[in-house]
Length: 381
Image 1 (cartoon, rainbow, N blue to C red):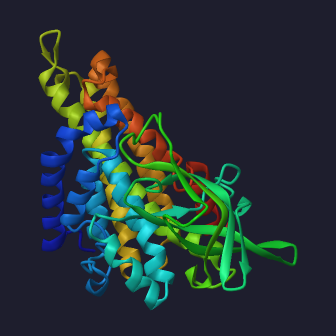
Image 2: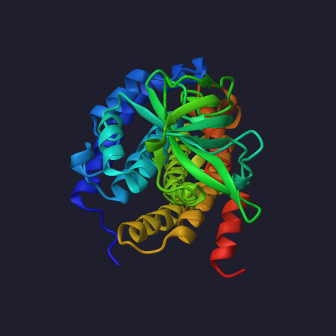
Image 3: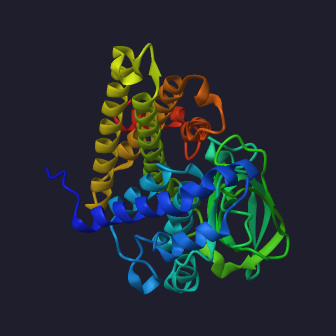
């Protein structure tokens, strides 16, 4: 086993950390307060090469490994969950299915424009009545001559409604066989007649990321917009979620790291009873536990990335990573607020935002309960 990062991976960590501290951190509080998506920061992330990191150069990417990408998400989340969410959703859920299941024509048409930061793509799976039960989808797609006709809606879709959102990969019910629904994935471009995108506001967390509702009212797209084959929709979506769980794990890890650093720095400076908080065993032990949990989370997540990069099965480890990192983010953020005391409840302190941002991690891309279901099946239950 070699736990040493490559020079490229170390450089990515340093570069993204410096970018996050220099460009994201000064804007994060105001963007959160306004609930405002930042086109400027998104473009900067594109210029830094963070979109399409894993894609071959022929499609506009950098040909990097999974761990390099995960480190980038981790470092953004260490400073701001909203910008990390934009990056993670676009790369893992937006770009990935097109690259892995698209035709060469689809790849060349869409991927280059999605690697610059001037265009985002979304993943249309969740519906008002179909969250954890992805097969409960009611959105339909009917082939009418040379066109698919789509009707239905999606909800809680990241990167779906901003002005630079170029389109969405949509799971729809395209028929029935032996009493079971047939699921198919179809590419729907922004601006298609009948395709309506509505931003969702007043969120508790990730307030500076773009979350949307999508509506399809007799939306017609060419039959060539089929992604993969008819009936492969559920497989494509669930396979995509395996990779997406790694990025949510990275968000949990990065958030925990940032919260821990805030708590440690505050505890060193804050004095009570004539000495810093770190000199009280109860606080020192809290911080020690936080550091230990973060180390365990990082090792588990990085191992899952190693499995993926080496072509080995990683479904179980991806679910474990997503589950553990998100749960650790919750625990660390909670203890960090406790160390801050009353100040941790004030918006003047970044830990308040981190405490809110961590809450989605146990819900998005498969709840903690669903991760346990995936793991239990993988171990033979």
